[in-house]
Image (cartoon, rainbow, N blue to C red; front, side, top):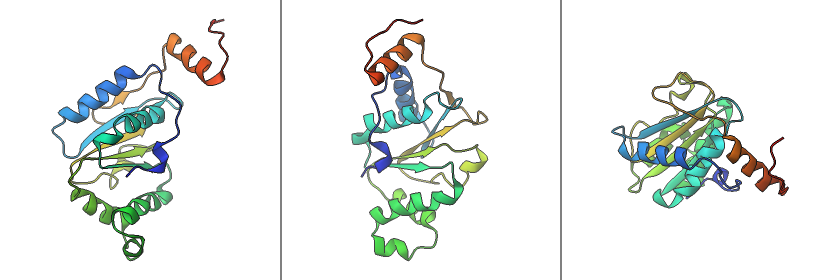
Length: 177
């Protein structure tokens, strides 16, 4: 099952190396679940990179779920939507704490899972958002830089930026002025 937030993104340009490094970090992590953090300034492409990773590795996971974490009041609904899929809408309605119940069901999943926590304000805000156990990977995006071992996402180099702009605009003029 794949979260609806994973679909519908423009092709990823100029981020092949970051995608490879992220995959290797997840596969070689001793943490269970493995956690990766993408940091960088606003608009640099953290969310796009996370979505590209989720799309590229969708078949490697039994569950790929996206949580928009910038609004703490909406997080429960994000986990409740997954809970309704993992159990049933009727059972999910009876659960008081959707996050805890979802984590318990994720921990029992035989296939690996990917949980993307997008736009987490800071490391403190991530407390309670990370599943305590389970065969999975958690990918966090955040503007904050005070995380243990984050990957900093930098702006695209000029060639990749021009390629991205021309591919999205339909304008074939590649001249940099």
